Length: 122
Image (cartoon, rainbow, N blue to C red; front, side):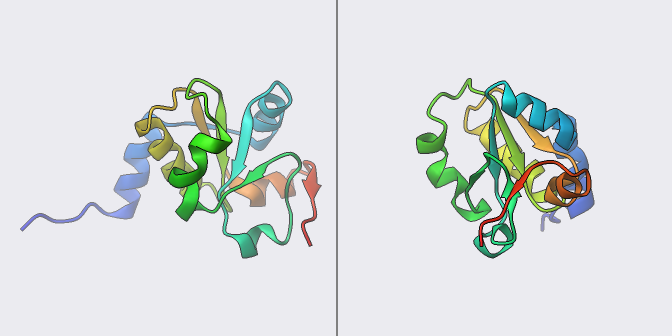
């Protein structure tokens, strides 16, 4: 019987493959044309999301990414609440052929704590 990989090991392995950037760096890249995708669930994004970000729940990302970002060479930045789901989502996008993908370290919690621009969605 094969033993499943534990979550800390999965995250550590994924960090070896996926770049992480600070929210401030992500905002700078977004202003230069990168697409920022907030993969939190709808109820999480209802409290606000980064200005200019596209909201796509993590569960639908693979199904909707090609419409949202049709060019697999376009830079894609992925954010969640804390930086874990986005790291795994970015790895999935990389495996789907997206070549310039990064995760926003600390997620929306850090984005908001750093006072970066947020649009209210309610």
